[in-house]
Amino acid sequence: MLERQTVALAAVWTALPALEAAVTAAAERLGRGTGRLVYTGAGTSGRLAVQDGVELVPTFSWPRERLAFVLAGGEAALTASIEGAEDDEAAARARIADLGLARADVHIAVAASGTTPFVLAAQAEARVRGALTIAIANNPGSPLLAAAEHAVALPTGAEFLAGSTRMVAGTAQKIALNLLSTGIMYGLKRVYRGRMVAVVPTNAKLRARALRILCELTGAGEEAAAMALKETGGDVRLAVLRLDGLSLEEARRRLAEARGDLRQARGF
Image (cartoon, rainbow, N blue to C red; front, side):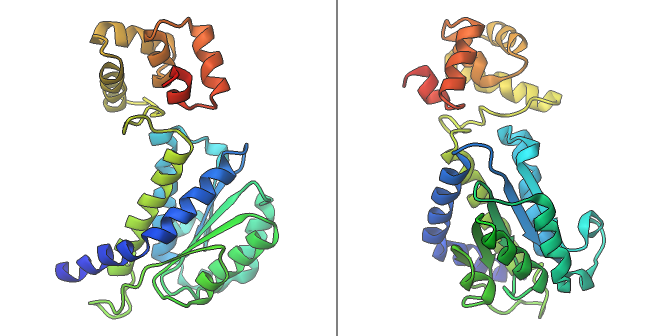
């Protein structure tokens, strides 16, 4: 079983050009304004998609209102298997309609087979409404990939446990989603010098991480860094600018003008 897992990484290697193109397109679309990242999936693929999306809020300070999920079976499917829901095309279209997807949005559809009716219907509705469509599937040439603007094929082949896509297919999807969403956040300038400068310090571990990041980026001591974080409400990017010598008002103005890009706000 472990040996078969190496196939997942190999599959993602082959998909790197497609992932890169998807990252570029998604970052460009989301960087225009207030568009949302919308994840769609069913079963294992849906749960993996949700897991990827929810991490963007604390890690990159991605606004919760700019994140949505279209999960076959709804939230109940996160903790229970609701297999019949994956055939409900009407529910998928209704969910996309309720969200009011439009050209500003990016829709990420995930399905191992690439033939799941719920996911196909959601993607079709999203594309009709003008959203950018990205599809991830483990079956090259499948309908889901064929109908997406950016198709990420992960050819993992037969499973060690026949038909159990939570195995190699799921591992490949998780890796691809990690690369895709993190790449988008890089493109949106929510990462600076390989550090999570948009991290939301909501617990002791994250507060310590924010302090460490601030010290590393500015060379300030812990006392000065802690004071800057307190003054800025835990915003690492604003704290960096404060330690660069800017007033809080000027730091806020610069960061706003740079649309959150710390490199641009610092002038280098």
